[in-house]
Image 1 (cartoon, helix red, strand yellow):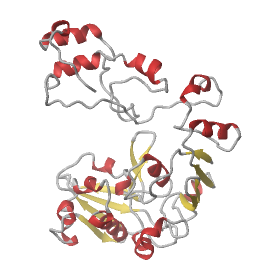
Image 2 (image 1 turned 45 degrees about the horizontal axis):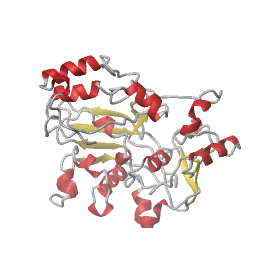
Image 3 (image 1 turned 30 degrees about the vertical axis):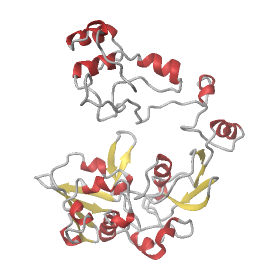
Image 4 (image 1 turned 180 degrees about the vertical axis):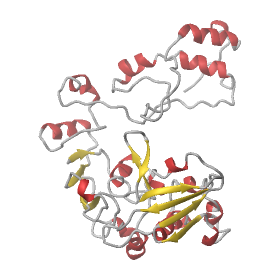
Length: 343
């Protein structure tokens, strides 16, 4: 399967990735303790087949699947996963998202700062197939966090052997459905099926080729010439209206939101009525259809609806009269004395 990913990924080390390009590739090569479920937006079993949560919500016990191995045949164990977390909690690793782990796991921040030993860390391998993680405080969303690549275990045995070159194609060891076959900088990343993946029998594709082409027109021409099987995000905006008429055009909502971040500590933005008025005064439909013109969906929601989660109320997208009323209530009738705001 051939597709375009746009730019060159900065790294294929899941603990160091901070771009969507790299995370998209790595998601095909590594499996977390839990895996993301695209149908619900939640999680499903990954390396762990099941888990238990203590009554106080602090201790999570994960039970790994039987016969799990890395692509080099080395067993995937609870101790290996524990060591993976020790690596990301090492300052020398330099992970951009290490705070995600420091913020939830017991003594993770103290271990990162060198104040406690690893024996005090809330991550224990009880046996080869049982991993115990203790949190600082109850976090109902902890299982959702495990889907993020920061929590995805890496092969410490390969990293210890090859160092920074462990992500080279001849050295890279993975746990997911595909493994790295080759990588040509600024050209392509080629993955092939990992036959040692626990569920390899259900993996339909033999390979995935990620082509690197920043120019959307170039990518589109590659698609027309059958050099690509699909274009996902890098669609030429000028051609979008015509592309929507094609039989091979498909559209689906993605979990990506654009918004303005306001400093609510300064006047008049410290007034919630002013903020509501500004929000209701923006015609999102006109903005997305006539200005952006890129298939963005106007919304006031932070995420799209999922099977097991949806917003209970519909928020008005555009209401000038209500915006005016809110400004009156905030002390700015007809916008009188309202200061100029710079974006």
